[in-house]
Length: 201
Image (cartoon, rainbow, N blue to C red; front, side):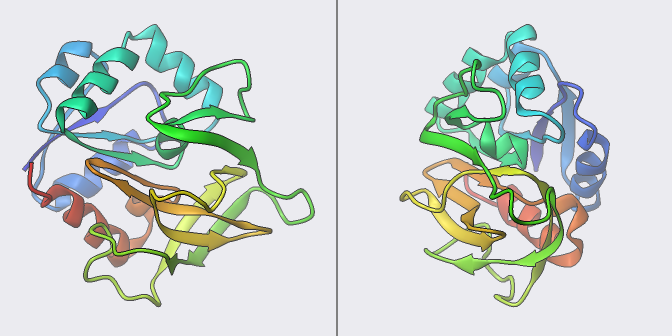
């Protein structure tokens, strides 16, 4: 199982890499456009500020190669900000366009609840899910975010609640994303990553 992990400077790249290697994956970490062109599977992790992620992708010339690889059918997994970057825009960085692979805008969670939404929470499944296959509906996953995509759209396969409902898992053709951190979510997170690695190319 070969997977290319996009390293644009996010703080969770190393922990994602360790989680993948524990599953037996051959991990190639890179920020070069050529690595995207050669990738069998792609993972974009993310923590911090959405604007920093988008700016880093553009600085390394990764935006168009990433879009082209996904258009070719390469399986892609976005983690946390990696999910949010798939949309057209985010209120966290309103002047920067997202990858626009999914329609819509990422918005701030309600200010009346404790932010960031940090810690363990459960999912509510809304559609059949290849990523969540074999994972108990009672499982908890680890979240750390203040922005999220509204819980609507055919790409949503699971949602979560914190002040409002938001998308927790997306699956659309070969595009996958999770708002939580599977690399910090114990056995359920490891199973989700294993499911992604075993998806047919």
